[in-house]
Length: 181
Image 1: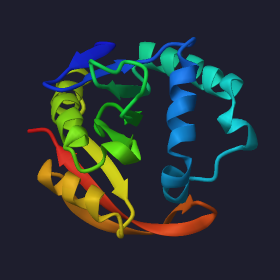
Image 2 (image 1 turned 180 degrees about the horizontal axis):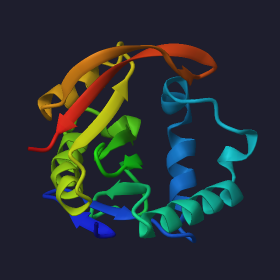
Image 3 (image 1 turned 180 degrees about the vertical axis):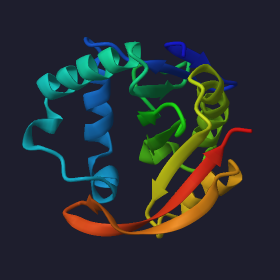
């Protein structure tokens, strides 16, 4: 995988330590929007030190092709991320799979940015990392995400009871799968 990809409207790139201010600004700007949909964050999450440490771990994991987070930017605004796409939990051999996760700035929703990003990254990941199965877990009431996955030809495979603790509460999820042919 490359560190940078470009689509018609965006640049997607792996951020390095030293760019934690971009990440922190994204999370602070979207705190009220994202927190209800995610795991409870540690107290120090909204600090430059935490975000720098996270970027160090993420970059080292990217080099080993174990974890990837691509931050999305408009070319005319390279200092305010639109969101990110991450790939994690890579399994090799007979399983040949990973998980995808994503988040978007509240102001960037419903403009097709995530569809554009995933349309670029999913086939690239499948081919470059030899991943056949990409799984996504989504809250059943997240209709925008459900529509996105179905538009990208993910198949709903199941219902996961009490799958993840979101904002302090155990929540059910749908399991969706993208299969590379």
